[in-house]
Amino acid sequence: MATTLPRQVRRDIAREHGERVLAAQQDVRGEWQVGTDAALHLGAGEGARRRIPWEQVETLAWDAEASTVTVATVEEGALRREVVAFEGPGRLIELARERVDASIVAQAHEKVGGGRDTVTVVARRSPTRRGPITFSYVLDRGLSSDDAAVQEATARALAVVRSDLGLGPDDA
Image (cartoon, rainbow, N blue to C red; front, side, top):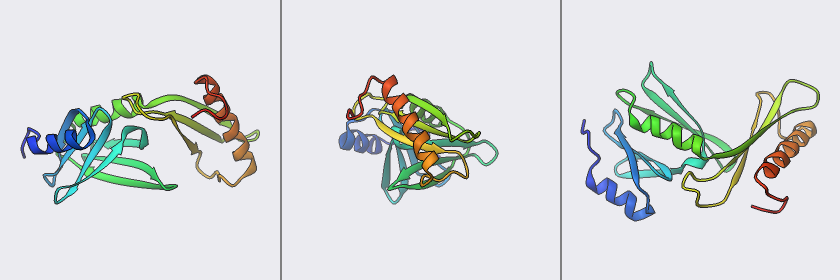
């Protein structure tokens, strides 16, 4: 496997998105997986590439035993997971964790009703600090977003996050 990102891959990413490549690693198929200042670029075979802004990565989990990373994103309300196998850990995994964490600008947890279950609201923005703040909601296992108590807890958590950021109810 090559150890240096080919110039053409670097140029294509920079030219298309104006991003700076910070880390790259080949997976077990020989595809280049690339982390930039603004996004994760997953090689999807035959030159195809999928760009995932860091603030859209819900979770990123490294499995040391399997040498895989699982990237979870939410697209159109559905959770999408992609698993990429590597020969071992590398700088790309470290960068990905740092960039995903850097995209979180605020979060709040609220209990649902009087129980132990919680709703978490996370406010995120690109680690480059360009673009809007987005909000995502994480429900404890077994909770439903259709439940009135869950909706109330979500509204409370969102109000806390917006207040922490100095945002009014209509601010983006």
